[in-house]
Length: 399
Image (cartoon, rainbow, N blue to C red; front, top):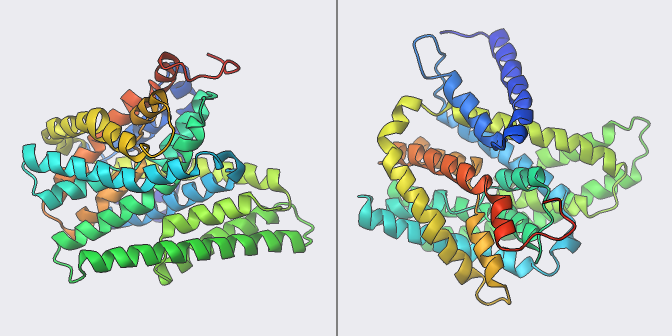
């Protein structure tokens, strides 16, 4: 079927409205909304003779980078640094060492038992090694649990900062498999430089935004959140020019603004909460559209096998090793091990080797989709149960 611009507009509006309307039944029946958004995109197209064909991995990847960048920016905007004072090192250890260990373990498993080469297996491990900020923020918010031992803060900090490491590994290993001239050592230096530039750029742009909102005296209240939106767009664009780590830059910009004295804070936060939902719903629907249901079944066994290994062995091992230097209770380690939610980010990252034409990339893409669905269904729906069993719910929380 051929579609004009007007068709794209009304179909986009219809899909967005459907995504919004699905939010209420998702809470009523305990099904994570993320699953419903993915399912909406997956089964509305690419499935039959009268469906429209959506097969634009390049466009999907670009939109994913935009949406994830905004989700991370808004997550930082709503974050108070004081909440992370006691768990900062734990979160950063999970976001760096934890991601590396998890990716290597999955890589070894895929190499030894599933017929991948070691680099291909490591690439698959890198794609699924980071927890997803959108999934974590969404499910923690919907459960409204007050958890002991700073667990919510640890999960939020990890999910907000572990994407840079996973993305670097995905890009680097994709380059190795496509015959890139850059060596792994050179790529590692580029990664560290990108982290440094991202930190500096994020702090600078965030501070500029705070100063502008303080100094400007605008008659129209609605212009203040647009100032922050313009800074976020500038950060997205300049990050690529300066080869900064885009996702880290967005998180630092958000945190810097969110912890500064900005005018009309509440009004701006409410504005960006709507933007976050727009990015989250649209991202999952578009990623779902890129999935071909008939192609998933052949990879069902591989996907479920890797999901089981990830949830039961790789994630727990990486968490326990990453948190070993810290005085962390066994209960907290077990809970964080189980609530390692995968969401849109791994699916988006799996588009990188697919677009690059890496061998077995189609198998990786479909397997990652199955892994994400399994993670959200099992881990996302058992968060409250796991917290209750481990005795990690504060007495003041509604149980």
